[in-house]
Image 1 (cartoon, rainbow, N blue to C red):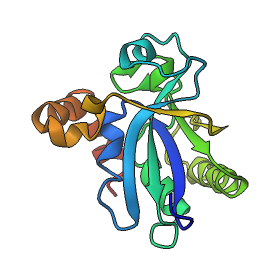
Image 2: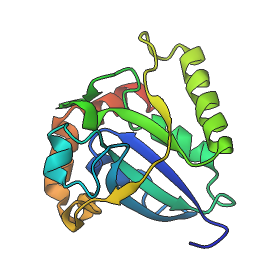
Image 3: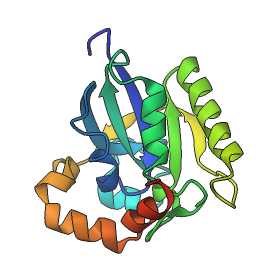
Image 4: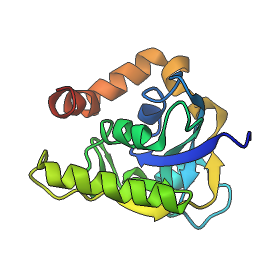
Length: 176
């Protein structure tokens, strides 16, 4: 990784829906779907979905902070999720679908905490903001079929995003 690039890791429920919003933006080098925060080495999709490994479905973003700063990544992250749901996201329930920001350094931790407090203070949501802020740990890339799912299986992806309730939630809460 170039010394100018940094990593950002976000869990926002189903990782299929977390790639497209970040992908192909200026300063975004790559977006990888995977698993983090758990206790099993190299977990499979089925193992993570069974909620027995402790992992979150997440995306790891390699970015150039001079072009796309971390605080802008945080803004975009919040706009993809329901930050008040402590039990998953939309139709996806369970530990592996919870939301979290995994920070890679003290600056990211500070910015994540600041952005969460700003969202809480905005009173945009009636319920508390429950998205966790955790130290980054080992990130395991998901199986190839899950990488850039929105491109490989666009019809299924679009139906899933609409059918899960995510697309409607974003339209109702973030498109203002």
